Image (spheres, rainbow, N blue to C red):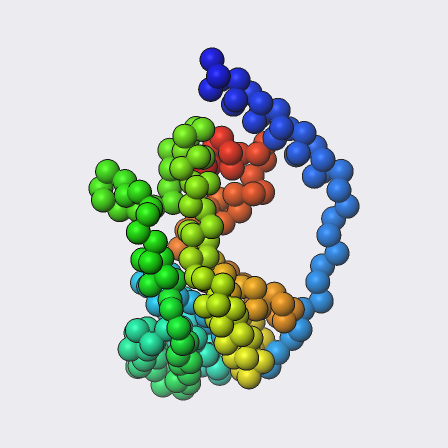
Amino acid sequence: MFTRFAFILVAAVGVLIALQQKLKPAPVPRDYIRGRNNTILYITSEHPGHSNVHAATAQSLLQNNPDIEIHFASFPKLAKTVSRVSTFAKQHQPRAKDIIFHPLNGTSFHEAFDFYDHLTPDEDGKIGAIQPPGVEGIKALAKDIQIFIAPWHQETHLAHFRQVTELIEQVDPAVVCLDTMFAPAIEATRALNRQHAFITPNILVDNFLDRQPWLGMLWKYPA
């Protein structure tokens, strides 16, 4: 009985929020800073689940637009992968430029995540943010959501923010391609008011949970 009442309450709140959002005026578009033409800066974590889609799009861009200058910022483990992507692209398009790799210092996303030993593994022995629908799923996700979003301690998070800020100002790209799980890079890019895009292997609903109608993030997409 309580669970059914909770879902009805959540749905009612969702309706009120949805109606309120429709009454709000549309936000004024931001006038982003335009960097150097034909220059792209990729910033991503080194884990294949994060970086493969960035590497693939970089390769495609080079092969189809050889005049583009691509910079790739990540942790040192990804340097060899970026080098192979650059070489492969030039094999198919000799006029393509080499990708310029910028190694990031400090702790990566997954290295920082591994520091948390209090997280409860699932039945497969893995720790994940995906939880079943319902109140219990929301409770389990809410307990550790901050760690899933940004696992770094304050000092490391700020160091990454400053490092990315300096790199963006140095490269001056026309667009910054971001990893949705690399919070310091996202914050630095937005703080500099730079034109940017997100590249992700996930479906759209995973990235826009807060914008689902009828407060769907609480009852339909709790992951």
